[in-house]
Image (cartoon, rainbow, N blue to C red; front, side, top):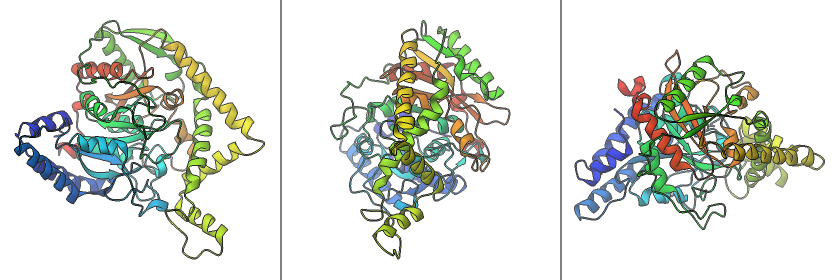
Length: 486
C-alpha cells in the first residue's frame, strides 16, 4: 500500500516508526519493483540510511524535526545533488558529478526528507514519454507495455509504484503534469518564479519550472510549502511570501468559478478522456463550483510557438556541452573542431540534436524575425488570452492530454504526433501560469486519466484546495496499480 508523505512524517516525528525502518522499506520496494519499471537512473542506499539514522538520533535527543522527517523522496536527474551523479538522461553527462546542489534539494533535506535516488527522464527533459533517455525507457506501473509519460516519467512512476512518497520533476511544457496524468498521481507545476531553479540543468530558461509529483493534493501542498520561496541565487525567483498551502486546503468550493474553453475539447480528444474529464467537472459543480464559458483563441498556435521558443533556448543552453569544459569528450579527435563536433555527436541523442538544430535555425540571421520573434509575439497573445480569462474565472479546467498512456514505441518515430500530445499543457508555461494534474478516472483499458486545473500566477492555494476538495469526494487518487497491490 502506498503511504503519503504526510502520514509517514507524522509517524516518524511521533516515534511510532523509525526513519531507518521507513527508508529500509522504501529501498526494499525500489529493489523489488524498479527492475520492471526502470524509474531510477541511480539509487543512494548508503547515504539514505545514514540520513535516516541521523533523524532518529535527533528525535531521541528531543530535537524538533522537520515537516518531511524520514520521508523517502526522489528527484529527477536534471537536478544537481551533492551525492551521486547528475546525468540529465544523456551520454554527454553520463559520469558527471555536480560541484553544487540544487536549492530544492537543500530545502528537502533541511525539512528532513531523505533522498533515495535520481529518476529517469527524457534526455535534457526533451520529450513526452521518457523514451528519449540515453539509458532506458521508464515503464508505466499501470501497464508496463505503456510509457510513463515525460519528461519526468521516472519521478511519476516512482510515486505511482509506491517506491517514494514524493518526487520532484521539471515542467517546461507539461513534463510534470503529463506523466502525473499517465501514472495516476498528482502533478503540480508552480508559477514561474515561485520555486528557485538554482541547480536545475536548463532546457528552456523562460519556461522551466521545478514541479512536484505526489500521491494526493495534501502531499503536494506539503512539498510546495517546503521548496517554495525566494532564492537570491536565481534571478528569476520571485520575492513573494509563501502561504501555508496545507491550512488552505479546506476552502469550500462554493462559488468557485471554473472556466471551460472549447479549445480544450476539440478534435483529437479521445472519447474516454472527454467523458471522464467532463464527469470530473460535474463533480466540482456538485460541490458548489460554477462553470463559465471562456475563449482562448490563440491556444491553437501554442505547439508551434512553444517548439520554436523552447528549441531556441535549448540551442543556447546546450552550447556549453562542447567536450572541453565538462562532460563527454570524443576519444581521438583530429583537431579542435573535431573535439566539439564529435563529442556532441556522440553525446547527444536524436531528439536533442533535432531541437538544437531547430533552435539554431530559428535564431540564425535572416530567420530570427520570421520565426523566433514571431513566436515571442504569439506567446504574448497567448498570455493575454489567459489574462482576460482570469478576469472572469478563478481556475480553468481541461484534460491534461488528448489520450491516455500510449504503447512504448507507438509514437517514437513520429515527432509531430509526440509534440501534439503537449497541446493542453504547454500554454501554461508560455503564459507563466500555475497548473495541476489530478487523477479523475480511467479509460476502458484501465489506464489513468488526469484533470488539469490552471490558475493565474501565484494561485497555487486555489489549485491545491480545489484538488483537495475534489479528492474528498472521489477515490481515484487512492487506486493503486497492480504492481503495488500485488
